[in-house]
Image (cartoon, rainbow, N blue to C red):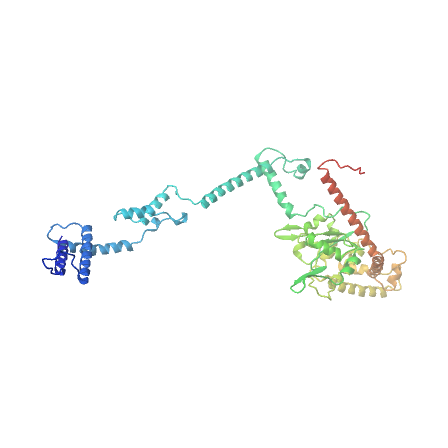
Length: 520
């Protein structure tokens, strides 16, 4: 009240002071106000309006006449409230009352509007925290994003589909055996409706499904042996790092090198052994390479990655799938892990890395030729006698000792009719006895063994002379008729391809109606 009266009086006084004296006889007109007084009055007006607003927000004083205490009261109250206000702001909100922002930022429009309506309403953050804590106590969250709803729906759908599919598969795979062949193959699991038999049949079928990718493609990798076939032994050869070596360089890319003496090794031993290529290389990579290495097919049976077995994370060559007597099978490889199923049949050589003067492969020919000449019943015993030794070197050493012993016996019994053979001395030195000597009977045109022994030749010398003559005849045939053989093979392959194509076209044509063979 005091401020209003004072401002009004001050304004009236300033107006009177600024009004100039006017003569009585003139008509009244508006008096000019100085700029200073106008500015002063404007400031006083602002001050009075501010005072009125401040007074309206504070509580009325106890006495109407005590205006000064009423002005000081809000200031003291503000000072008293200041520490409490700072402590409220500095106080941190507990962690469990904080809003869950993983579902999105919640709306605070209602709390903001409520805060504008009244100063005593709680903060919007506290309201959201209380609501979130209520939801966690058991109420369902009202806000779920569309992506979260889709994820939950697909999760439930996939879980139900997986459970249903697994149950159906288990029931289907446990059904009875469909034919007599399948029942004979699982004679230990008969047909029946009991849960145990149902589970055993399902387990057997699942095991077969897994073994389809781990076991060789066929139970018999080679056809049954032909009784008229003259080669009683089977020699399995690896490809990579034994017959060839492949390497890649930035300059040349992939290059394949053929091992020195590979042609001679294969063609010479083809007269003694049934040669089988047993490699871990897939068919698509190995077949074109083998056709270039052996165009005349001295290697009778090529077996690729599809014929191997996958066991414990490694590729294994299981000789029991060859359909051959293992006592007559020899395998040459560069990795012992590849032949770990039958290590007693294996000859392990160091991998060939492209050395141009390598002789290890050709050095095995005398040893392998000796086995065929002596006709041993079990080659595994012969291989075991060289266990842990370099076979070409060890065989040459033993042969030299046997030759020395043979010459000594020849001198001792020179005057007698009985002549030593030399091969018997070598067999005794190896600790082995031959079951049958294939060289005791000489074919027509060859020197008689007794005459050869009298000249100081051993039986293995006669075998090598015969083998070398056969090899030279074979090379002569290749030179004279090799191109003819290749051309005949090419024509036969083209004919087979045309027959296969016509058969395929005819099978497709039969789907759309009978094929009219009569053409005008």
